[in-house]
Structure formats: C-alpha cells, structure tokens
Length: 228
Image 1: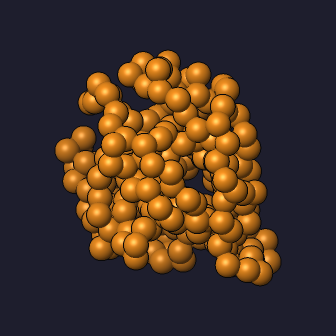
Image 2: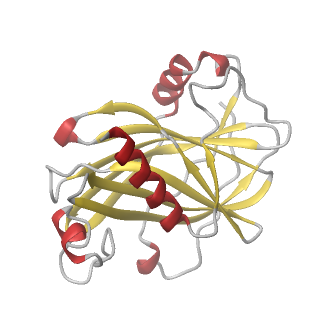
C-alpha cells in the first residue's frame, strides 16, 4: 500500500506540475549544510487546516515559484506537526536565484488510496526581490479552508466532481493570514536544522493576503528586506 501511495503521489506531482522544474526543498534532513553562493533560500512556516471537511485534512504537496518566465516546483516540505482535525504545520524552503521572482502558489493534496485524490491550490502571486547570498524569512502563513459562500473563489477545481467535493475543496474557499512570527519560527527552524544556527536570516514579509481574483491591481511587490 505504501508503494501504491508513493506511485500515486509521484503521478500527481507530474500531472499537476506541468512544465515546472521539480526539486526538493533545500532545507531537509538529507543535507548537513546550505550553500547560498549561487541561490538564496526563502523560508516560511505554513499551516493548513480544513474546517469545511475536518475529516479530510490535506497534505502540502509543493510550492511553486516563477522566475524569468520559468516555473519551479519545490516538494518534500518539512512536517512540523500533524494536529489531526486541527490541521498540519510545515516549514517550507525554496532556493531562488537573486533578482525578481514570483511566489505563485502552494498546492495541497487529500488522498485516500483508491477512493479520493483531490487537489487544492492556494494562490499567492506575490513578487519578491530576492537578495544575493542570504536566507530570507517571508512570514508565518496560516491557511484555513472554510465553507464557500456566494461567488468566493474555490479552494480547488470542480473536476473530478466527487473527489473535490468530498475533500471540501470545490465547495470550500481559503481564508489566509500572513504574520510576522520571526523569533519563534526561526528558533524552531534552527532547532530542527542546526546547520543553519550560525546563519544570519533576513526578513522580507509577504503582504497581507488577498485572493488574486479579488485584487484590483497587479501582484504586490514586497518591501525592502529588513535585517534582524
């Protein structure tokens, strides 16, 4: 069953990633050091909870970044806590070349082998100026899937009908907050990955979240980074 789940997961990544370049998030248990000589590393804490269908809490599958008209998909996020119906918490990290880049979306999956395979996309579409040779904290992101009302943007596509509805994605909508929890998040991150304990970590917070469909202007450009 584990093998089947892994196969389905890989097929899901391939099917939904399209032409994106796929790589593991740079902060993980398989490495003993980081290298920012060519690419900087963006980090954040991301929490997801499904209040629309509490029995179907999704997993974070990948985060997508666009730079120079090319999409990059970062997989294998670090699971911090599985809170059952209270959702899940992750550290995410993305190695990105210096210059302008757009954090596009976070992709979630709810999978029950042989029964449900549903996808929800949390869109950001926020542009950021990535500095050279740095690790940059972009915020504490809390996403909750709520029951959808009126013409609120859906958390997931309508198709496949049963999977998306049962998981609460097509009939749900995202409620998102992005806050500055730098001290606590970075303390926890350094405890998890001691090899970055001596690394100075800059801060460049994502703006308050509004669904891209409900914005009256182009994606927001972030403020200049601030040092901690």
